[in-house]
Image (tube, rainbow, N blue to C red):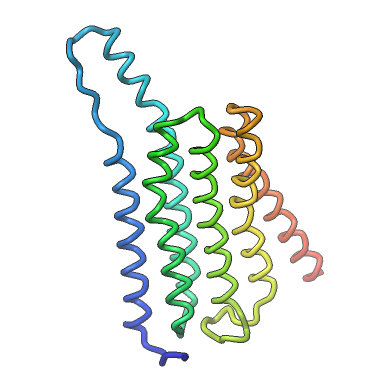
Length: 211
C-alpha cells in the first residue's frame, strides 16, 4: 500500500539507515583488540603488531565498503518522493546485510588465509551489493513512481550495472580463494578499472545519442 508523500517520513527512513550504518562502521574497529605486551621487547611488539595486520586490512576494506554503500544509499534516496511498505522492507534487508559485516569481517580477519571465512565475508559483501541493486531498481522503476527517476531507463541501466560490479568481482574472488590466496585478496582492485570502463562506455553512448 503506497503511503502519502511525507518528507518527514522519508527522512526517518534515512536517519534510521544512517544510524545503522554508522554503528556497523564503529563495530568494525571494536573487533580489533589492542595487544597486551608482557614485556617491552621490540620482538614482542613487532610480533603483536604483525598479528594485527590482517585485522586492519579487513577493517579498512569493510569500512570503505560500508562507506561506499552509504554514499550510494544517500544518493538514491535523494530522488525519493514517496515510499511504500515494500521499499521499507527492501531497505531493512539491505541494512541487515550491513550489520552482519562486522561479524563476517572479524571471522575473516581471525582466519585470514582460510578460504571458507573469506568466502563468507565475500558473500556478505556480494549480498549487500545485490540488495543495493534491488533498491536502485525499485526506486527508479516507472511502475511505482516513487522518485523523480521513475522511467529514466538510461539512469537505471547505468546504476544497475554499476551496482553489480562489486558483487560479481567478490563472487569471483570466492572461487579464486580456493586456488590462490594472494590473487583472491587482490581481486577487489579490479572493481575500479571495471567501473572506469563502464563510465567510459556510457559517456560515449551519451555523446553518440547527442550527436
